[in-house]
Image (cartoon, rainbow, N blue to C red; front, side, top):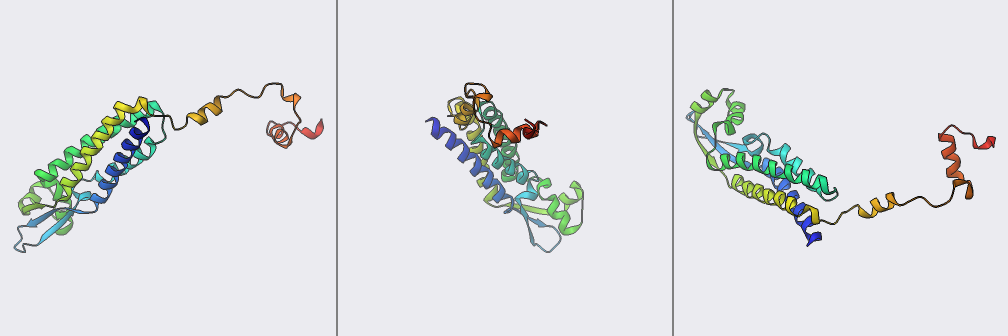
Length: 200
């Protein structure tokens, strides 16, 4: 269970981050303007939620690092994962179920040159949604579960670097340095300390 717990947490976190990055490039909304043209402007996820791509990249980084960090950082990363999942989940739910004008404002401004929330709202006839916001929201729910799972199981994970920690903590070979032959590595060490081994 302990080996699979780490794998499940890492895999769920990485997959949620990858979904967020992919989703940021896809069309989340279509906005029709009241300009008589009735043409729909596509709004990608990165425009609907400006923090979507950077936070998704952060989730990917957290997932990758989670596979190698020690106990304390597992808890830190677990808390960060939960926090990011809550923020992105809240923003994504808004876009999915009640798209605010702010979600399409950047696209409308780019297309028309009109700025200001009131002016943009007056120009927008209707806003349609695609399946991407809901699909991404499911990803954030998975991410939230992964963060909570990490916090609940982190203490039971097997340390990935335990072997190296033991090696580093192992005592030095017994006996003074003078009891073994002076080799080339020792000579380099002497030089780095400013001693000239040829002067002996």
